[in-house]
Image (cartoon, rainbow, N blue to C red; front, top):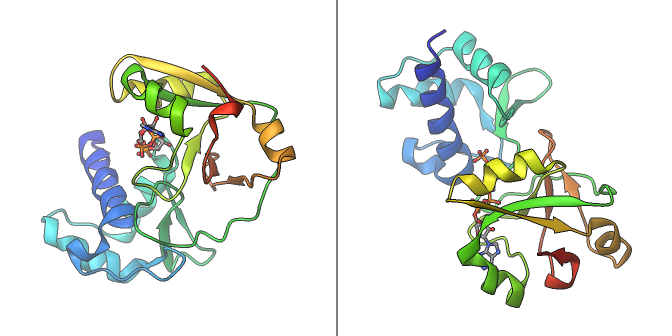
Length: 180
Ligand code: HQG
């Protein structure tokens, strides 16, 4: 399978399923699920012929497992990263003692003042390991890794959720729980 093609499909899927289903007139339900057949039919718009086999390949081989099917593979959604308002319906989970967030230097003054905010997405995204946080920060420039005292946050009553692809999600990280 040509990795350029599968990467292209993955990028478009991220855009459609997280940010802009209306681009291809796709409907998502309140939990972010799209009908697989409808997605395949409407994906034609990009002149990239998508079929179930190719979609399954992209979902299975995606580097961050960004997408998930429901049990009978009639529906698909992005596992995290949405800017559109949907309810992932994840169960609350107890986070590990520490989590990591990759960002860049120029955001630090605002993060020190306001904590980590979800910005345009539905949650603040946190990683279990520094390597992943390093890559996330590295998308924007020289990465800076923040250490989150997630155990203390959880004890203080903040809620955490673990996405299907192992990204920790929370509403906000106040600066007092961040080691800069
Ligand atoms: C920063 C990717 C100023 C924050 C990744 C980040 C992730 C603040 C940016 C997922 C701030 C938001 C999400 C504040 C936070 N003032 N800046 N108070 N609070 N920021 O893209 O975490 O590859 O929405 O540090 O792997 O970078 O697309 O969040 O730099 O899991 O699957 O504002 O996206 O996944 O940026 O990335 P984003 P993120 P995918």
